[in-house]
Amino acid sequence: MATNIQLLKDGLKNEGLRYTSQRQIVWDEICKTDDHRDAEDIYFKIKTSGQKVSRATVYRTIDVLVKNNLVRKLELGDGRNRYENKLDSSHHDHIVCIQCGRIDEFMDENIEKLQDEIAKKYQFKIVRHIHQLFGLCRDCR
Amino acid sequence: MATNIQLLKDGLKNEGLRYTSQRQIVWDEICKTDDHRDAEDIYFKIKTSGQKVSRATVYRTIDVLVKNNLVRKLELGDGRNRYENKLDSSHHDHIVCIQCGRIDEFMDENIEKLQDEIAKKYQFKIVRHIHQLFGLCRDCR
DNA sequence: CCTTTAATGAGATTGAGTCTCAAAAGTAAT
DNA sequence: ATTACTTTTGAGACTCAATCTCATTAAAGG
Ligand SMILES: [Zn+2]
Ligand SMILES: [Zn+2]
Ligand SMILES: [Zn+2]
Ligand SMILES: [Zn+2]
Image 1 (tube, rainbow over the protein chains, first blue to last red):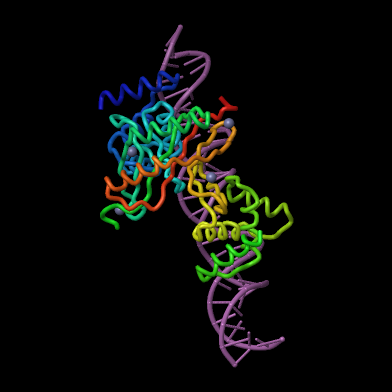
Image 2: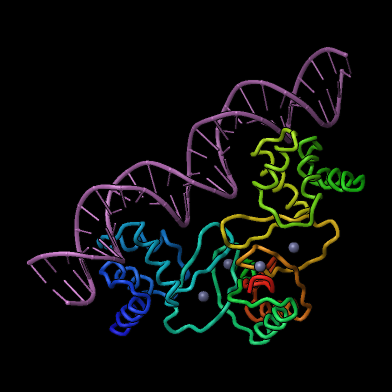
């Protein structure tokens, strides 16, 4: 956890931003699990734990963390963004159960390479991608 | 265009739904271009053309068309769904310019196959996927 | 400390999309 | 056509995630 604090401090310093207790609280909460949670979840977890961070600050801090590459934003296309810490996870994409909400992670080096080739073909300089598979998990079929 | 009308009538009949002038107007508007437009765009295009279809009906009709496989919904993760007609286009994914909004279409048989393998590995039965590449197009670099 | 500047909180606002319910219109049988 | 029944429509209220406003609070550096 000590290293998490330093990660945050360094990230903020790099951007010329200030280290505050609220930002630490939000970052701590996001580091607590490897789930893919939305901002409201994170906000209410903090709230019910008795700590005081406003909704606006939670949203603003999450944006800061995403920009600083500490958190990844997951766009599932259902109107709620999800977030996951990037503490130890390298790049991956997601396979989502439309029944129970279970989210598994996958990473396929070949797909990543093919994406680069597509970018070259269309003469785009890619900065990010969204790749999600939706279906029924083993338990839900 | 005559065939478009029949496509709509058949699609509605299959679902036990009624053929109405409003549904025809919405479907016509979506068939007019091969763009990837959001519901508000479609609504205002109809409105400014002098035809009268309410916002609620435009949204409801688009849903009907998506369910009937006449229209594809595109989830770009920015809070606005886009729609495109499926008149002649087979399956494809999208490569999007984050600067000018340009959307190109791509389709890679190998990626599609690799997705199936991932689904097998994770024991999911896939029903759809989202795959979008975001970056700068040639003109915007 | 003191000053400067950024961050926070409470609540208003936005914007896409959905819901409600009375009125209108399609459908089928008489 | 008339009637009876059911679905669809329209206007506007409502929802929900997310953003914005602005007065107050608190970092950071000297
Ligand atoms: Zn499941
Ligand atoms: Zn993940
Ligand atoms: Zn561009
Ligand atoms: Zn397309």
